[in-house]
Length: 109
Length: 280
Image 1 (spheres, helix red, strand yellow):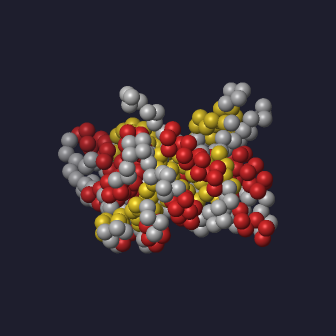
Image 2 (image 1 turned 90 degrees about the vertical axis):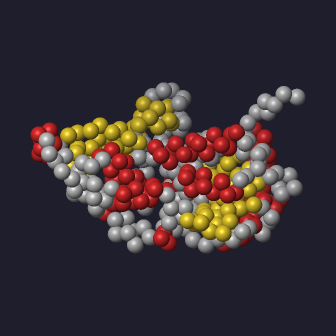
Image 3 (image 1 turned 30 degrees about the vertical axis):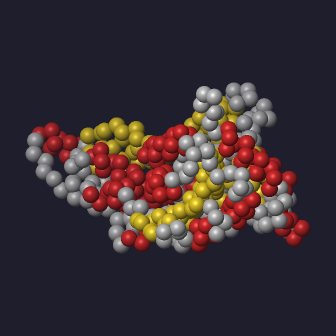
């Protein structure tokens, strides 16, 4: 349940940027390989945002697919786990996207 | 208890120095940042721009990495270790894989040869710190309360009390958990994942984030193999599927089988963390 701590971080960062404005919407980018479950973040968000400028804000989550680059042949492959195997047979895959855990933007009143 | 996040006094991380018996709370602004702003939004919207924004909202681009603060503090720890030529190892496993037993054995066997100190991480109690202290090694205990992993700021605070010597090894025993510690960089040199043969061969596949993030895997309790249906070759194959570059040691912290290779690895890396640039 690291999503609770992570959601607390999200609320803290947005609160800091919002200052005295109320937050209408928060957009997050969560990669499929980030080991963070969007549904768990949604669940925690309602609890963590209570009594903050984010209370009742809409939470938008953009899930980025995992992609890797084969370190042997350079081919790009789709990853649904933090590891994989390239068609060339190599298991040396560097993850190039899907690990994002980022607050993209917020909409404030 | 705070109804916003469920945190309470007892849930805040604490640091215990078994030598002095002193326990201090490690609660930081991080934990309660949201409380400070609790009612900041009950404000006034006077001018036209604000009235417009009140209806439509204004979009503000943030592009903020959620773990940036932890990563920044971890880099600070990493620099601190490099300056002091300290080999910091982050030991991660599920509960009961034998992290503390392996540490006790390693500290005892190499006591005359390598300088080592320990940061223990558990949700509660200083039992592990007491076990480590019994070996004669310097140790501090972090209790994370409800937290399921150590974070870089907790380690930084522990280092101030522990004050590990230069040219030494720091063993950080993380909270027993194969999920969360993979996400939180502490500034360590190497993550060491410990798996025991009483768990399944497929654990590296089931917890790929951890085995992917680790550079070393220790397969512990191999003295129990005659009593179990555990396929070592299959386990190693699974681990390499997740992380082909994993350095793997098979050992028993109880009987001592296989420990030599692990000790050689420690000897090699403690001298190799920083090249000696001092003039003769």
